[in-house]
Amino acid sequence: MADMNELVEAAKRARTRAYAPYSRYQVGAAVRGDNGKVYLGANIENASYGLALCAERNAVAAAILDGCKQITGVAVITSTSPPAAPCGMCRQTLAEFAREMDVVMVNEKGERVDTTLSALLPRAFRPEDLP
Ligand code: THU
Image (cartoon, rainbow, N blue to C red):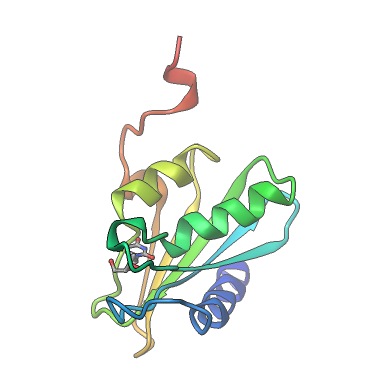
């Protein structure tokens, strides 16, 4: 629980760095790597709209680039009420790096939803599924 609170605070900090001039929908994310460290991500949009990068996947990329092999938890913050969940592409990306992880979604109002990746993405397609 304390671990997840730390991730929520990190996601809030990350959100201040979102680059979202087109949607004006700022997303902050934080993941915890298997080394215990916290990695930040924010959404980064582009004038070519389809190139928008999600906050969660940017946080995953930061963790992997730092040498993490697994991710144990993720927090995401938006302005949505009730708190928005990671998109499908981000769920699949997260599933690559752990069979299960804690997921916490929060918003600016302080509303919070605690769940797990397997609840958001049951029967995920996993690396082990490849022959
Ligand atoms: N976005 C995220 O960062 N994460 C999600 O899980 C869903 C959507 C971003 C992408 C885009 O910059 C903005 O939110 C609106 O879709």
